[in-house]
Image (cartoon, rainbow, N blue to C red; front, side, top):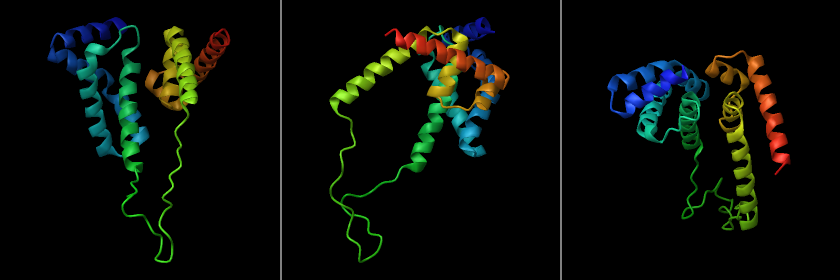
Length: 189
């Protein structure tokens, strides 16, 4: 199957419209299911599915065939969902016109706490992330795929099971094994 997908990607990169359609047909239902489980709105889901494939096809030259195409595509879909969720939750506070709960209450404090981490904390976090990412990249594909879906995409075991067409028990076992490999790899650093 992986070779089939890689051939479709190569054809699509050469401009073969049929290859694009076949790629979309292969993944449409799974991408739709993933997005719908997160968004819970059919109209938005349909728009996000289309947007996911448009973004994926535009970024196709950047796809690394070392990784599973499905994982790459799920990441694009998931990021689209996160963007929509963030937009929904975005609350704006005007600094020019402070909010008042009632007429007798004073405006919001003009003091805004600096919640940004210190440069040292930022550097340490960045270094930890690099080490973790390198360790994940060294995982065998079957473990790397489930770890990315569980921890970077924050999907449930059931969602991962559905996406990868695996029993939930197998997903849990692979995640457990991947974590063990990662713990060992990160201890050595």
